[in-house]
Image 1 (cartoon, rainbow, N blue to C red):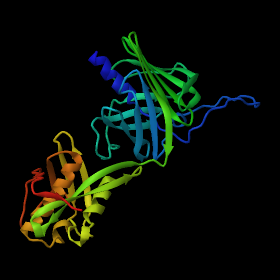
Image 2 (image 1 turned 180 degrees about the vertical axis):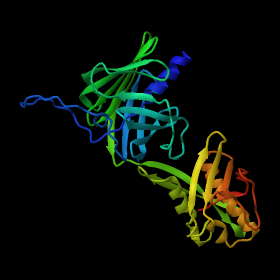
Image 3 (image 1 turned 135 degrees about the vertical axis):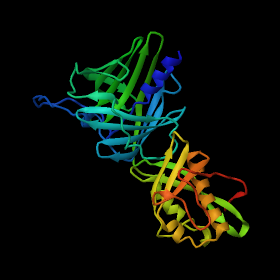
Length: 347
């Protein structure tokens, strides 16, 4: 039963992307002509949209999807269901739609589009005609079983391309609609059926996150934090957001770095459960702080990133080299640790 449940979660988290939704009307007096469709016709990459799905047969079947990044032939999606948030990277290349990465518990906004995968799962394969088939990395068979299926879902009535995946004791049916994308998944076994159906598409929809930014309160020998509601559009870079707010100075007293300082790199190393941030050298050269204030500045950076990524270790470097100043020096890989003692919200 556990194996079946895992298969359902993986299947129902497979993703979708859309252009402007519409209901199809195929009536025409013009003579029909064969049109050779491409994957981009059935899975367009569209920014700043929200796709909402209803679920039937399982509490985790419902979901909503946002678009984090679109870079060249890859799209990164944020898939939210009642159990978790999944970051997925989909690639359209060489006549194949490929699932490059699928990262669970994805509550941050790191760019995953650089991931490498030498044996990705193929979601769709050209030519888009009945009978096109391929084998998945787990050895199971997937194929285009129909190109003209009538489906009814909350978003409308459509003609869809049907893709079937065969497992030992079950089948999964995925449906793609021209100029819209992946709109429906049906998982069928001998004992039960689970569906995920597109119900709504919203344009100009963005991801909202509330981030705590920590700052030094030198007069009171403590750190304070301010909650900021951040709106992320497609391709908004996370490090640019942190750079902007590290340079802001609430009430003219607390900013973390000079206007000339840059954040060169920022990411979570999941294997180490540690955040890496690399500043330009101006972080130290233009700091103009004694050891006590510098300690508060470093603690503020550490707390901000640790809080956002939900980790307790942050490695800080300067232009690729371990952090070093007149007061503090660390070894390569040596982290600073989150410490929420003596912290107060600033209002």
